[in-house]
Amino acid sequence: MTVLLIAGSPTERSRSQALLEAVGQRLSRAGRTVERLPVRQLDPTALLVADASERGIARAVDQLATAQAVVVATPVYKAAYSGLLKVFLDLLPQTALQGKTVLPLATGGSPHHMLALDYALRPVLQSLSARHILSGVYATDSQVTWTPEGAFTLADEIGRRIDAAVEALSDAIAPTVPRPGFAPIAFAQVQHSV
Image (cartoon, rainbow, N blue to C red; front, side):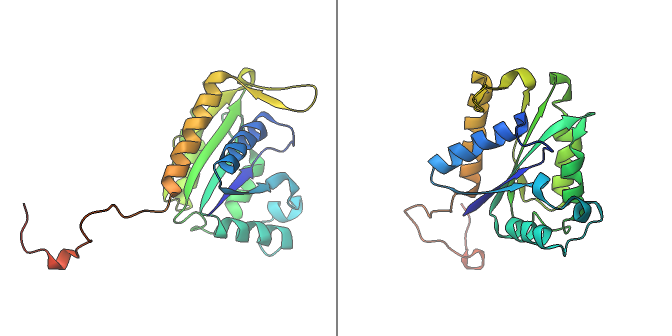
């Protein structure tokens, strides 16, 4: 049960990367297997020309195919998700997210861009056949800060929202455990209804 963390920021030390790491840390503590896919490390020429056969991109697509769930993090630029993330999502097959639960994360300079998760990113994730797209987490620059030592801190409110999002993601991908009681009955065997 692997959760793939896709970093859509063009910079390594970004606020969206910090949100993604916060999710990854919480998932790891909960016993989930976490893999990372920093899109900025993929070959830029192959991304721009949508060369899905390039080795690094093919490996990234395979990594996505084997993940049970996906967390996508992006900064918001000009009221939309990053262009880097866009070129990656554009080269994916139409069913790349089929059967997967997706948690979107975004950061931006002000609260005015928080709807970018819903009007820009969510439709693209839906078009890639995501089974379930959870409510996203958006944070402003003032809610995610970096220390001089290279660590990040989250505002209390964002920390609580990340906790809730990770719990929702874990619940969504938890294996279904049959409840004790009656054995399942096929619909064709039902003779009477109550």
